[in-house]
Image 1 (cartoon, helix red, strand yellow):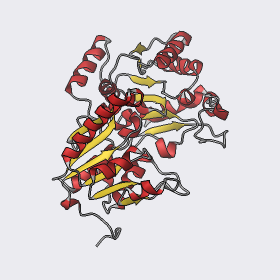
Image 2 (cartoon, helix red, strand yellow):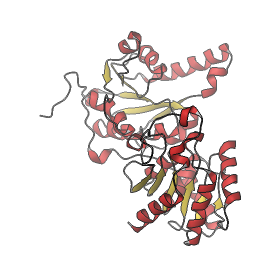
Image 3 (cartoon, rainbow, N blue to C red):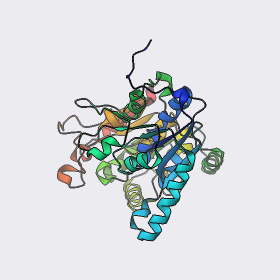
Length: 364
């Protein structure tokens, strides 16, 4: 008989579960294996997700998810009456589902009051030592956070299941992202219009919502020129965010001869996934699109600076990490050196290191 916690839960007794991940796009995608493991252990279980509205498409069409409920980020700035009505509507929807299992995967306070308001038989959350007693008493089970080791976020999410006695098998830990037929058709048409076939191009996504994670535009442009000299077709992507569009424009203005196909700001999240899935290789910084490429099983070259590749690196896909070995301070987790939004461990990364990583991965 396998060992497990004394207060383990029999998944066969569960009917409905709610998994809460109120974070950014990449964080939500890295939680996707939880749904697969739960459904495999309890086929009768209806599993819902609660995420921010802008991250909804990371989990929609996941075969193990019954419903995706959303919280609008703008609720915080809405008027008191409007917010109260919206919150009550969401609470009523969730209560109607009558969950007997709630899994909260962050320190967000909403998880604690939902655990109390929904009254599930089992409620699981991370054991944050600095949380008040109200937090601790809101959950029946709390899973331990690493005290002196670096642990990938996928495994940390799965620790919520381990805490209640569900041990994930190795073959259940893959990221799950389903682009859908509409996105697949759209991307197929776009590629056809540019004369590109599947696996006939490299996808480069230089941006991130966090400026301190980005590589300088001149070095990104030099990498594009290197790829062009070798005869690689390149598609460049970026979020519709103004700063990312500006970064892409700056990069393209600095290239000497490379003329990549610019799809920045023109793709939905599902279309980005379909595009990444057809690419021969993905190149980018630590960002949600990097995780999207990994989920689509496209080899990844990832440039890391102040964030840690052990916790946030490409998950279960052939990859190469490009990171400085001259900065013992990394990964510091700061938003640039001294909080100045510029990370020298990234800005000093040589173009040759990225090119060598590309060569090494393609040679594989």
